[in-house]
Structure formats: structure tokens, C-alpha cells
Image (cartoon, rainbow, N blue to C red; front, side, top):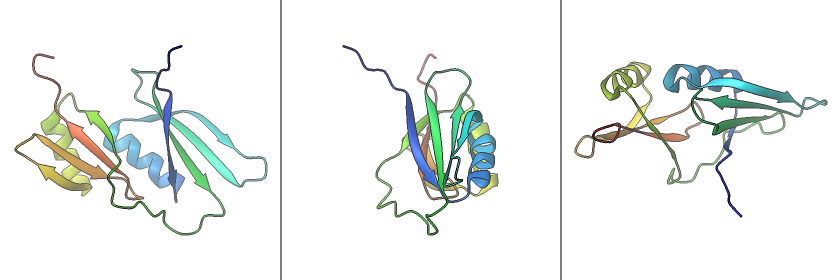
Length: 125
């Protein structure tokens, strides 16, 4: 038996704002969406266009408050093909929340406070 990654789910308070953020900050685009018949939830699956792995965003009508994210010790990581350009974009968006220049990485936060690590491509890649 073998398991492969499929998707990661994040709950969001404003699906439209989140879709705009992920498109601008990480180049992720919706590839599939679903709305419950009763309007109680909406799902949007985002793709980087290169891998099968997707990010699922879930909006719940009956969740009126921001989500409690603890200490943000869980995160997803993206490799930026042009690290300097990515850093400049994220700096202009004001979404960089932590940076470790010695390690060559930084974290951005989405509109709901979910953190994403941004790293350089591996040496020689």
C-alpha cells in the first residue's frame, strides 16, 4: 500500500479575499469549487499548475469569528523560483511576518493568519 499527498485544507473567513491573496502572493489558481445546496459552506481547491497537490479553502457560513490558530507552529512551505522577486512582492503586500536571513527563508501570513514558509530553490536546481 502506498499513500500520496492529495490536499491540505484551511478554513477561511472571507473566501473571496483569500482567493485574491493566494493568486497574488503564491500564484495559486482555483481548479475546482463547490457550494453546498443550502449555502452553509463553500470549497475552493487551488493548484500551482505543476503538481497534483492542492490547497483546499473552506468557508463556513455559520463560523462568524476568526479561527484560533494557536501559535502558528504548523505551516506549509513553498519554494520560490525567484526568491528575491517573491520577497519584494510579499514585502509590498505587507504579509511578511517573520524572516530568518541567515537561513534564507521567511514566512508570510494570509488574511486569516495562516503562515507559509518561503524558501530558495535547492543549490544546483
